[in-house]
Image 1 (tube, rainbow, N blue to C red):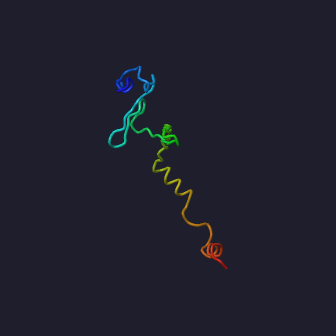
Image 2: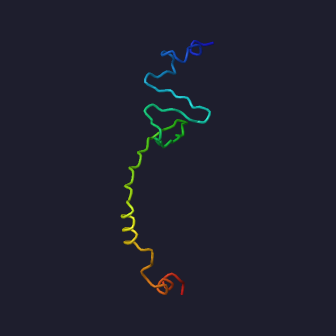
Image 3: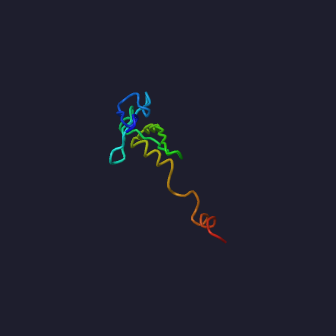
Length: 97
């Protein structure tokens, strides 16, 4: 057995150790924990041609302002769902001659 193979994975002098690197293992459900990540964080995972992965943390969208019932009613009145042209005009514009 070579001296490199006999070294413990915890040995800081091992050639595969990189000080500052954070090693993580994937569990049986293909999950891993990331330092600094919080529940609900979303990441874009990109796999490179060399087999490495790049994770980019996506920004959470800002919550939308919830409209009150009064604001909803005003918006519905301002944007009626009835067409502004007659049925005959609409048929003439949309049908082939």
